[in-house]
Image 1 (cartoon, rainbow over the protein chains, first blue to last red):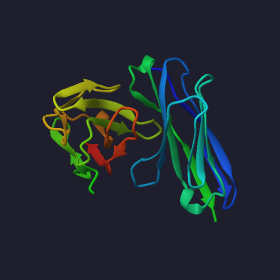
Image 2: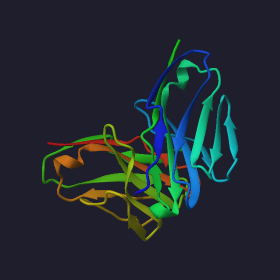
Image 3: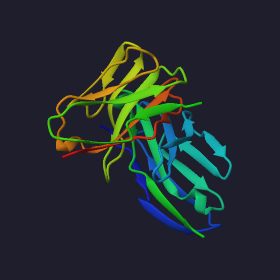
Image 4: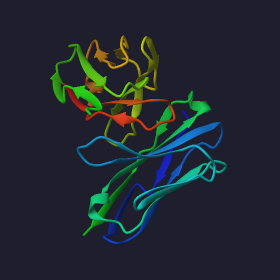
Length: 113
Length: 112
């Protein structure tokens, strides 16, 4: 299994701060990179699916970039709000893993009011 | 729109008992997945299906079975429950493999 790694493991920021975290994934035989938001006591909710090198996606205050050549993606949150508190998961699909999604452990974000 | 529905939400089983976790989706998605999520671990794929009549093993299939007789339903069966199967189970679906996955609310299963 080719691993997906996320950093940092957890993050505490103040309301209004902007923040970002990283997802590292295998760059070889890459198909797609998924980002999900997972609130406590709920189920994961899709944010973005990215497939092309250099791709940038945006949803409200949240945006993501993708570098498939070096195998990383950044997720940015602009002006964090308490309701952004959640675990942010990324998952990569590569031919080396028989094209199944392999999930990272997530970055847990806490936004203090 | 119900999306992905899982039942039951909670269950306690004794070692050696069997049970089926139900999953149904109303989005006409071809792809369906079963994951387990353990503390400190990422989501692990148990089984998946790319369409009615087609299933395949994921990373951690041992101790589980699935079937996909219809597009809507993808039940997960535990034949001989073991304490190692204590976990939270999530069912998900997607229209294609590169589209976002839609998750159910999860089933919390404890085996004592």
